[in-house]
Amino acid sequence: MTQVWTNWAGNQQARPQAAYVPRDVDELRSVVERATASGHRVKAVGAGHSFTGVAVTDGVSVSLDHLTGIESVTRCDDGTSLVTVGAGTRLHDLGPALWERGLAMTNLGDIDAQSVAGALSTGTHGTGARFGGLASQVVGARIVLSDGDEVEATGDLLEAARLGLGALGVLTAVTLRCEPAFLLRAVEAPGRLGETLERFAATTAALDHYEFYWFPHTDRVLTKANTRRAATEAPAPLGRVRGWVDDELLSNSAFEVLNRIGAVRPTVIPAMNRLAARALSARTFTDRSYRVFASSRRVRFREMEFALAVEQVPDVLNEIRRWVDRSDYRVAFPVEVRCAAADDVWLSTAYGRATGYVAVHQYHRREPGAYFDAVEKIATAAGGRPHWGKLHTRAADDLRSTYEHFDNFVAVRDKVDPQGTFDNAYLRSVLGPRLL
Image 1: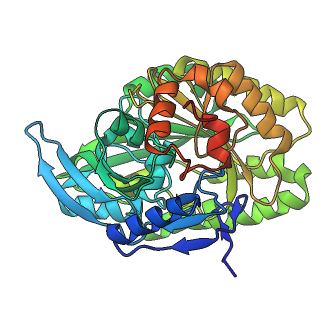
Image 2 (image 1 turned 60 degrees about the vertical axis):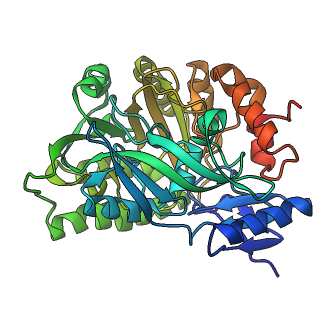
Image 3 (image 1 turned 180 degrees about the vertical axis):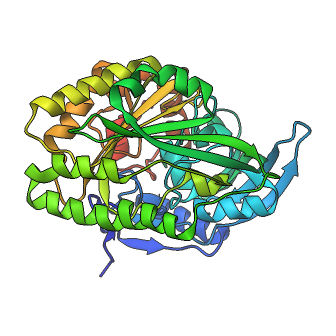
């Protein structure tokens, strides 16, 4: 009996006809070639951290867990380096490997469990008004197409593959433009929502990497400001006890208990949020960039995130707050707000505009229901673009108008995968039928 695949959040399941973990690219090519010849669909799976059905298949499932590690490093005259890395490499492994070579990713998200291929293919972005998401760091890629050939992506294929949704083929390696290693000085502090929103545009412009978390049913936020420091400076990481109390006890163990209580008795959630907001006190520390960017997230949840023109963020947050205040729906998870520079990646949620991100979460034992529906309606009305790896109900006819190169991407997909080897229900929804 084929094993059931389940994503991290537990809201997506698949029972593929076959599951493979190819030992090398030749084995992967053979798997794809045989699947195409027999009319089976193929989906690559990483860590399962997408909340959508982007990796779901009833055909052939392929893990890239053996296609890992840094293949090569090319130093450039401008001080950056081109690093080619196996597509199955997990981000939590890539950070230390780059550091050993005196390098770092320009930006990272706040979860580092994903594979490089999975993070790129769904638009993982991190935060920082002057810095693009992970896909903007891609300058090259190798990909196995539906006929089993591995090709070096160039031209339009490379433009599409930088954020390809798994719709074009199976990534085997990517080349990232990395920069010299750096530290981050993290300053985390409590604040008030109104004041934070009033200063949002100025704060994001002034700081390297900024985000904040709003606790619904309160006016309290936790702000996080990360400032770049030279790798040669002395780090000042969190003490072991303080780190355990904040990141394991409060943010994971105690938070899990509170969410279990809230799932049974939602009426106590506002009081729990007030307690949680007060428990997270100010702290300052300095550490390697990859250690500061990412946080331990062991409490399982479902997530929806929308990318907005940065000036829309305060209005959207206030509208969400008004909905929460007048609704009887209780929200236990903080709302996360981040930002990113405009980029030129075809399907990037930050394409062509400075972007603010509003992400809402719900504990995995509760249905997001009316809450996610309301947020999607509010964000869509404000011109929001849904994160490709997080829950939403938008479809191709609606999404096409929000991306200048949407049809260019679809044309590349139709050219390199005319028979739909890498298709699935999610991609048929968000990309629509083939144009050929």
